[in-house]
Image (cartoon, rainbow over all chains, first blue to last red; front, top):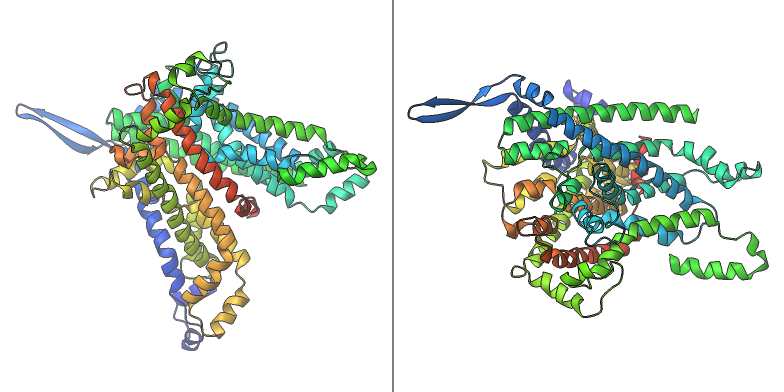
Length: 308
Length: 297
């Protein structure tokens, strides 16, 4: 930063010649910055602009013509007063309410078990639990879809309706949990590995049991990593799309607007309402950023309190 | 891992001091239950791939069939629609492998520059990237499509490759790792010896960052392979589909009569096997501490 500041003013000539600023770092950052501007920030700005426009159809005797006109917050009002928008948001929250705590709890329990003294076959179990991470959501949904279908189910699909009104939320959450559990477990396990071992020895000399060790010492120490796992899971849930979309052909329980992102897709591509779609997408974006900030703040509070 | 653990358990049980090394049963059992949960679908696909369509619905789900349907399923999916499955597989390698490698390179150079140099605007760029990590990218897909449409990029390989070339998360990881693994003293010593900045980057920086770059590549590979929405939105031409989109199309109600199930199952089976093999062979290169280490900052 100091270099940057002197560069903005007129730096003494001696200083400039002593330390010539290389051009390389700027060249190295350039591709990333350009791509980021083109494919992440520009689309976000464009979405915002589109969300403020609408199609104006002017009819005449010689046919109709379309033109884009400014709509103000009309599209946002339409989105926010649409019961289907809140419906899709509610369904997504239900899946998240099932899935996020499950991922967090199971990943933590498995990580603590991997780290426990004298646990056996940990190499095998760790790999077996991690492997689904390499299976893309669409393939995972196909896999589980067949497991849910009454005709092919090996897990009692003939007796339990996995696509029922309530069970569907668990069915979708299960596919997502299956896919991300192992990755989060390894993240937490690595965090556990970085705790100094002397701490455990001291506790065990004081007579702490394995369980006490896990709950009283290890758990608080990995609280920041758990916050991150929670954050990533929440962001993942907000972007839920692959699993319900792939399960949709197998059941009538999933509509084409089942979760918000599916609704954005249907609006934009099936109904060809890009302006409404952009408004929903932008509303969703603002909500996601809000939730992200919230989880971060709450997580930091919690981990500060527990480390005190 | 298992091969090492098993004999040790056996010999420990035989020794009188075995009491201290007695396996801790509860965590072992919990982990095995987790392993079973995670492997049941894979096991089922293994069994289902040995069945013909009729057997799929008429025989018990967990009993494999040995009448040679396995081979007819495999040849069935490989020759489906003039061998389009292999085309999808090659596309996937291009998208996930090529895209993953390119995006790792872009992230590595940006991370190295941000981690090892201070230049005008470097802090601003880094803060923007941290913000972008948290910005959910899927929300912008539809508009990316609209932006690419006028320049004729939709329904091309580029339309799926380009938007995924830059990953703020990968840049963030590379920056953290460059700071930790490339010592200033080494760069200074190379400068005194007359090395150019470029030379320092590719023969010191990239080399020291190597282990992290493999992890970043694997994360990027999975991210592209897992991204369904982008190709779903961008591509209309069957020949450009990745595996995920292609097989999704096969179960769609229009073409997805139950008679295609055994083909889709064979396709799923064939796409999981190489992936598992890649992961098992690259297992020791995984450096997840890179990610959990990122929490501290």
